[in-house]
Length: 475
Image (cartoon, rainbow, N blue to C red; front, top):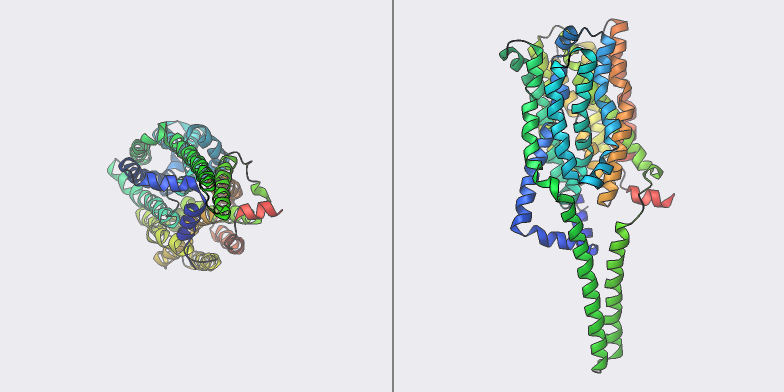
């Protein structure tokens, strides 16, 4: 079975003149330099997509005490990330069409910087939530547009680039979880500087996106127009050649063949123009899109419960605060190697269902360990939950595989992530409510384990070898 990267490359080079023009442009020094810079920009952006969340998880008890939060309000705080991702993520494709994907991601990095600088000193819970929402808005639009940028700039390396992006995301998540408590202690023990320090990393991520703000999207459009113009000129040339051959006495069949070739090239150019004006894909008609959205939502539920509450579970079991932060970091760090391996393996399989099942079984085992012996086997449970947490890079990879075109990926990414994050909103909040009213972690952990079962079922459905374009057209 050929890899997904191979299938993508073959289809674009054979049938898409615009892609051929892009491939030729890739050889130019300027284009090559921009691609290398874009790799750096993607990595730095990915590093900033979770520290705003995991740094808070490591200091949640201190923030609760400092702001006077109850367990239910803290649960609301841990539900803010998926809420913001759902609300703001759906706007990302529209913003990208108007301003360009590079400009939107650059603005997203700036919003993360501002939110992280403001929230520790906003004064009170409402200000803290509002500043958190600003940072999460930047994360939301970047989340949605990363698969789009990878598909557009690296169509022959979707698996590899998704793996690199996911690995950087996992690295940023893990480092923030592990380093926040030691940094807070080094800065005097106050939680406010310990949260503010992560704004520096976000500010660094703004810089490499600046060259893609002004003309990144217009350059791509110009290449498409150039390709269509070249196809039209080629058609005209072939038509003239056919007429010349006929005038010079060439066999009628040869002349007819050349004229037919000219008409085919002309039609291909017209198809490229028509493709640019195609109506939006009716993504809600696709069962795979819905399965992928639900899978994304359930894995996001597990991820945000883990980032928001697992460190507290370990602390309540008698684990020291610094060690609990390191355990959370271990969970996130498992994604560094696996986020690079899983997308590459997934693109080589006709169905991603087996990977979904393996990750789900690891999650169930980890939750069982948290229920029966949270402190005794803490490191093993952290490893198992870390493997289960790699459903996120798998979901991103499936977004790129379940659509054939860049516009299809953009719509599927926005739909799956926005719908998925809406689904994930109640989970962290419900965990906080159950924890406060039951006085322990038994019921919350049982809820986490119960949600893993439907995640496995819809993940198998989302992993089937089909595309949303075909399903939407067939209904």
